[in-house]
Length: 111
Image 1 (cartoon, rainbow, N blue to C red):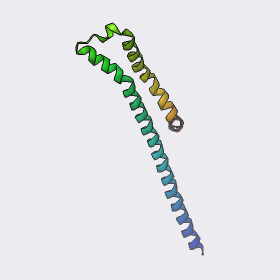
Image 2: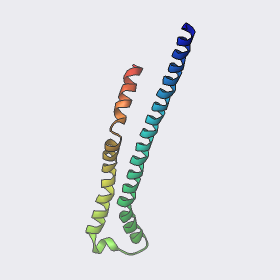
Image 3: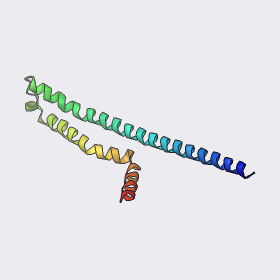
Image 4: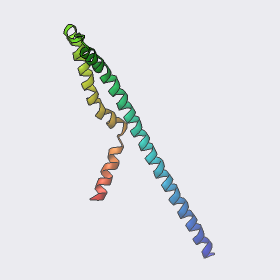
């Protein structure tokens, strides 16, 4: 009778261990998915912000003095490009808000 209880205990222990590993794996997968979403969003905003600036710069390189007639257009394109650099930390902080807590707890466990 005691041997049966021991076997049952081992089965429960193995089952709980496997379940915990599965939960941890799914949690890491969810965090990776959120990081991919943040990276994709950042990349899309980067392309949207820098495309007008690069088009205006290419037009100027190939001989059309576009900025002499429309200086406000070059200014708007430059400000939009600079805005993309300020939006990146905001995107990462919104989408990865729980990631920082994990890093802090790991840091506290190390020291």
